[in-house]
Image (cartoon, rainbow, N blue to C red; front, side):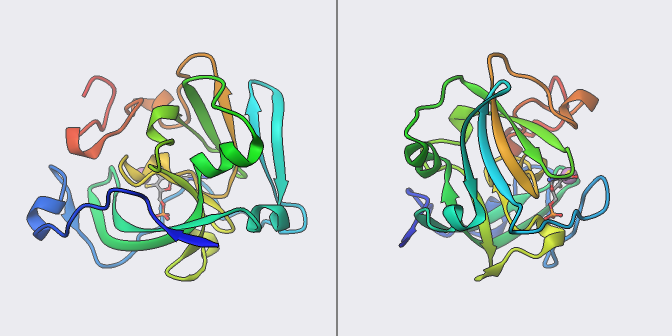
Length: 201
Ligand SMILES: Nc1nc2c(c(=O)[nH]1)N[C@H]1C(S)=C(S)[C@@H](COP(=O)(O)O)O[C@H]1N2
Ligand SMILES: [Mo]
């Protein structure tokens, strides 16, 4: 079943008001990543929730596809200053993932991990409450590999580097641990409306 979410969709705003400070609007969909696009065999794909090194729950692709799915349409903002309006995604909200695992978030912080070994930290409060999903569809189709397919994290209210592509799991951490870009001077939260680009912003 697919429900329409996330809840609390904002009414359409004039374009200028939809652009966070310092951003410009683009019509295309740039590809930004550290390395080559990993090849991921769906038969071997797994998505795993961990607390530290301890696995809490793992899904195969077929199991993941059977989870309740939510659609979200809205704007995304990259720290390199492009924003793209009205992107359409479908996937499993973090709330639904935790419910399916039968757990509540064990800590307040986590690192999202990609199959390319990319990591990025996100406060759990920025993922729950219908604010984020593990997306498996873009514009009604499987997510193209360059944009993170088969599955990517989507945290649209934060700068797009937080939306880990080729996501293989979420690892809950006791403290807020910096991920790849955060270790290199980028912000621990990354709210585009507060222009949290770099450490100290
Ligand atoms: N696994 C992984 N996820 C990643 C990255 C990466 O290098 N590896 N780059 C991040 C950055 S910096 C950005 S801006 C967005 C770009 O997503 P896109 O290529 O779909 O536009 O992915 C983010 N997620
Ligand atoms: Mo980025």
